[in-house]
Length: 141
Image 1: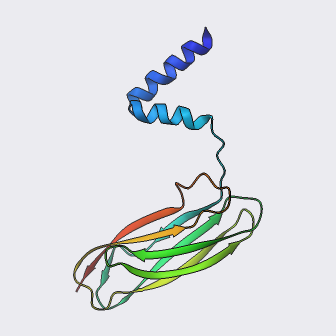
Image 2 (image 1 turned 180 degrees about the vertical axis):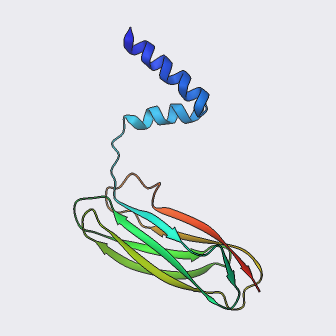
């Protein structure tokens, strides 16, 4: 009886806080094994920049596993279809590493640009929600 009551309370709480489809999906996920791997820990760049100047994009990638892994980090600007940087990163177990790329804004127009960082999943990884981050930069003259 207590378990049924608890599940009912949990279900009602989920409905009130998150909406029904989210709660049902979360309950299904709880039965699955989550396998961590690599992640984008942080991504940083200025919110505004001047056209024609290079913009530094800092990405910290992390390894959530206890063993060494290698992944591919790709940083792009989907707005312009530019590849800002791409390289293999080997990370010791439970470690992180900062990588800085320089984005060339020469010839671009004023506006808002999306910068996206993504690490490829490693073998067996199922928790890939933290493998991508993006931010927006406003370019001005």
